Length: 303
Length: 294
Image 1 (tube, rainbow over the protein chains, first blue to last red):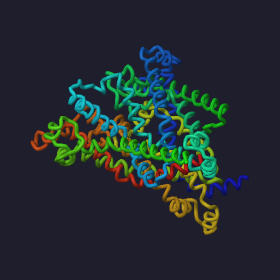
Image 2: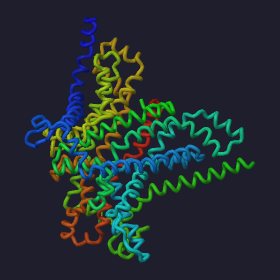
Image 3: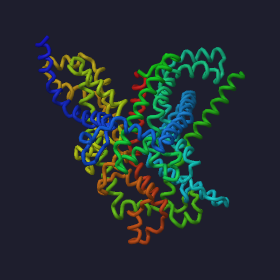
């Protein structure tokens, strides 16, 4: 046994040496933050003392978080935005994937896919720029309104328009890309089923209902489980940070954006970190819970 | 006969919907491009509704690259960040993937668990910021590179690919006395060129598009990448790099602020559009194989 281990170490020592750098980066930039997050949540962080020198405060941070005047709003906005994203954004890629799959013209299908995948590769900054060209005071929509003698609308300062803008741009960005995983599932359906349906005289809608949809059931449940489990985790902080203004905080401020402002602009590390710790705790419970339900009802599990 | 008609109607409907959605996908980009070519006089003539440009002008693009240099410098930083960042990410990711693929390696399981864990858990914004600060990366070029070097998802793809290399190839090389590093460099890496291309492109897109990390880690204006400068221009309405130069050159007055901004936005998409054909080829395959197996 011992000589076997020795032999292995002799064989692999160079690999261990190579692995040193990746391991250091993994530990320093991924694992230490996780430890810091847990520790900071129970400390009153003092800038001069650092994480380890600051005093322990037990559950005080959690009490401060829960009694925060914005607490209810942050949770509500995070959940509302995630739910809107899910309810408006989840099914369009499924429908589009089915349409692309059923499309007879291969040439047209390829060209459409080329176009449809592009927005996924644009940064949120670019997408904000595109939205700006449509919705700013001098943008296309307001110019048209103006030409028809109507009042201009200040889209980016209006709470009423915030959700539609954020959800529409998110769908625009991911609609095409979202089809890929369904198309992959669709291509693995046995083509004999489709031939049999044709012989039986099935129309397109019965074919979709009886063959296509069952064929993507498990991947749909898998993705739905993931999204439901993430409902409190991230409402799209990077996107919201670009699209929101203080005028729409009432509907737009989420856990992620508040943590950014509280932590990195106001330098209140304890509360920001505690809220994110709280968020990941709930997130873990959610994903385990949703996965259990999915496993019971459909037999699909994410791991 | 009736069924056949149903199928035809359905095909027409499908074609119509897909063409409509494709146009919706492409239109904003085309619109912004046209806007970037519009002169101030034409913009005023058409009262801001630009569906076609009669007299396109490149003034806005001259403004981007000729004067001040802010955008040009930011472009260079972005290119540097993307190339250096992608190169280092690939090295770290390939080594990790290869290590995880060695079935007899003591400690392999720990490595796999450690990498899978970071796909689910992260330390959050502030703790990560504190680590970057404590490791003295704040306000340096490396703040945008080092924290992103471990690309967990990419490492797992490499692992899967390396595991599928036929054992006979490795055994015969081992007989010839090849060391583990030789095996990796001379066998594993050369035959995984397509995967390296896919992961590399993925990493490059992430680097090119990143702005948030630069916003929190970088204060030196000379180190700001293009996406961050673009963000400041739109969100903080900071056009100082352009207005400062407009005063020097009266010809700059011939485009609107809007056109000027859109020209920078277009410049921000050019590298993505340039590599897009490769992206599509490698990505779609990568996602397909990944999802079918997973």
